[in-house]
Length: 211
Image (tube, rainbow, N blue to C red):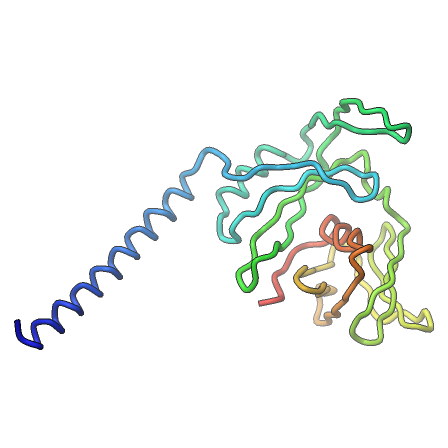
């Protein structure tokens, strides 16, 4: 076999591999779009004493699985939740689903999507709340209330704020927050204050701003 023939066979094999990759990618995408069964699981977690549900990781582009999740946990629907009271007694309680949160999960630079289910019985029960942070623009603290989030400097002057309905966030190695206009700030926070991230996920709107 001549050198030219070997080169041609090698190139042909490479083209065949590329074609197979494309074909299997298209078939996989079609299977995702036609899926009727969930590939995710959900577990109960908590913000303080407030229970909520969170999904296993989904790929950011798997819109069909997100659609199935939203159908299963439809806003306005009910869900039976095991709840433990202050005395440590556990009972099953029927609660109403009030909102679905979207957030980024670990896996940089291609993060996964997480979905969370929240219940009307605990809506705005977290407020008012405040957290110490280290942020851009000399931010040292944030306060949260029923209206929105406010970032403060060391003199307690307002540096940045946003109502919940306009708050955009991206939760990666830090928190990037946008006010729905043109200004963004970045926050770092202690692990002990992870509730801050959870509340931003609950009341804000995910917009990927990390990669």
